[in-house]
Length: 337
Image (cartoon, rainbow, N blue to C red; front, side, top):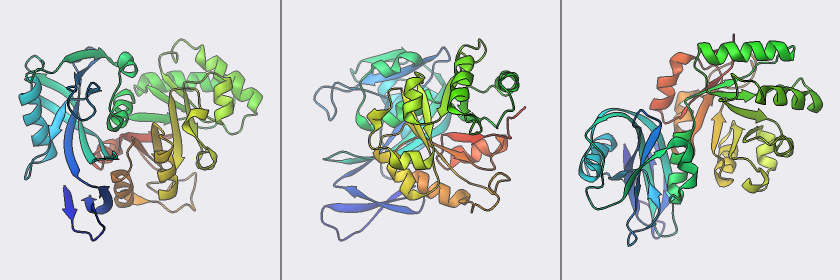
């Protein structure tokens, strides 16, 4: 539940979400929004009227949460009023605090996977079913960018273990993505030289089974650019050393975060997602203190980007991760074959 508490700072209040307080500038607007899927690979978008804030841009449908309403109830009401559909099944997707110069919004976003009715703009707004692979060609309000990323990114990330050979790597990855329905591979091979890393990546990029999967390289921005990578994942050290988002030429920039400072840096750089770790004690880092679920929930509530929980995660943790606001989980052993 989102609450507002008094504060003496002029023109500011403090919003509290999941027990965490954060300043909001001027008026705070609590909004519920939806990523609505038609089961055919399309997402419903609505165009904002020209005379409204951020007018002329496309957005994910939804509206304001009224006093006494839950975000989910508000969303179901808004979707009925605005696009004439009744929600059958939904699940939490992401929560986003975002501050414009003139207002602050807190977005509770849900994924709608089943509904009744035929969507149309009941209030005169233009609506459009857009193939998910074309979403990047549409212009959104800045606060909707994390929703766009959440819509495009899956729930599970497979972080590769250290492989002894390229043939072992290819066999393992092919088996893993098929058995566990993995769409996203975070390719981390710290034991390789840069030359061998490039050779392995080139081979993976040409593998027929892996070609349709999201391949994210755990390497430097420079190396990722040289390899023409569409997605790169930075270590926390590389994250803190990066000066601007535009240094990476690909689409998805992610990073490993372990502290609030690192998470803040990722948000300021407009990273597309982060992994937050370790949530639980792990065999790979036995001495590292675990953040735990409560701390993770607090950090996620202040992060305007998709967050994946890492460290001791298994497939049974996915629902709990989503319930505290995470996009999903990242793991090695949970899916390693």
